[in-house]
View 1 (cartoon, rainbow, N blue to C red):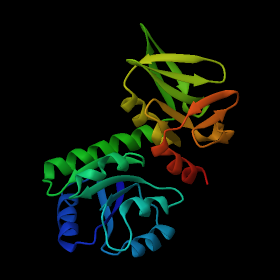
View 2 (view 1 turned 30 degrees about the horizontal axis):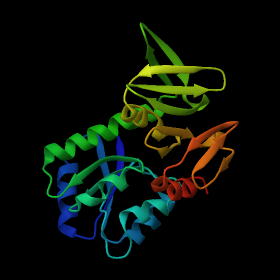
View 3 (view 1 turned 90 degrees about the vertical axis):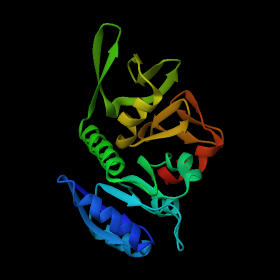
Length: 222
């Protein structure tokens, strides 16, 4: 069962989310809020797996709402503003629903959240390398780097090159505390030694930081 809440300053938008949610047997919408600060108070004493979150609200934006959480759950953004889509994927974003959306599109987003939660509970990856599969413990991966049509996974003792997209790597690693520093890099924050304006260090290795990710990176480890 996926536990969720919805936050939107428009009551009619919440009505639509509630109607769609009631049709999905594995989704429990525990509460809905037109006031984002009331939702923050709720989250202090209640654990949820998923947020349905509007981007543009009068008191606080959806992005700032997520930044205020010490540990944010997965999020499905529900908004009429397409221009925020790129920024939204710096968070634990499962999907970005443009209003108005129908039940089919809503269900697709919830199914993606369900898949992501299953991955989060799995502490290992099976990576295809040539004609075999290599099992890696996620906690031991220091960083992942895109290399053409492959992604290289680096641990203390080995490097594994697997044919996959960076998006597939993000889906597997972001739920486990990895952070995006650059379009080609995901890092395990437990291995970070030092962060500078344009780079960070993991041991003796230097990882680049794109300007669009720097502030989010600093806030994530603060």
